[in-house]
Image (tube, rainbow, N blue to C red; front, side, top):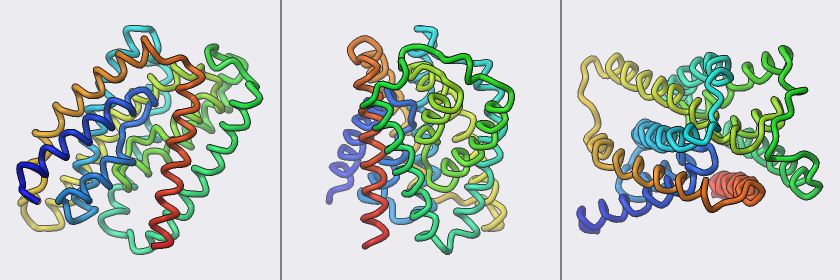
Length: 271
């Protein structure tokens, strides 16, 4: 395919992903990575850091719009970010140096997605709690400590798979700490920014040490091209979503994305 046509295809696809995912508290890496690998980027260890920068753009735009509505809990974000940052570094190093048993990792990740998805479907059908209200009875020190430890896992996923970690952060905030769905989405987007930044920085440092110099893969030129496209798509998408989408449909869309991601991982495992 002609390089110019390929670039236009990349621009259109990442814009669409950012538009949708900015409403879910997710950076879009679940789709950015396969898009990159299907449109000219040949190696996963190059697609992952590119995807991390694009998730930063998605999350930053989403935070801007959610903050205007008072839907970002900065205090809670600060208390949870430590575990995510540590996980991001471990995940990045895991991808670069250790990822030899990728099938086991994908199988575990698939199981996590299915469990979270099933729980959220059951809750959505039963309408077990008001998704538009905070449940402060769940905001206890023990739950905070447990969720903080769990965010290490979301950071690990961010660094190892090039995703923002929101696929775990949002359920943790909603069901672990009782935050209303929209606030969980805004706060998850906030957590993605430092997590993905740390993962990308760890990649750069590891790459420099590994190669004995600092020559970077040529595909990284996509970052300054696609970053503003993703930022614009996420800004427009989250602004539209906050005005037009009701909370329960957003929660249902999030569940559908979980199962789509799980289905793709199952397909990868079988293939």
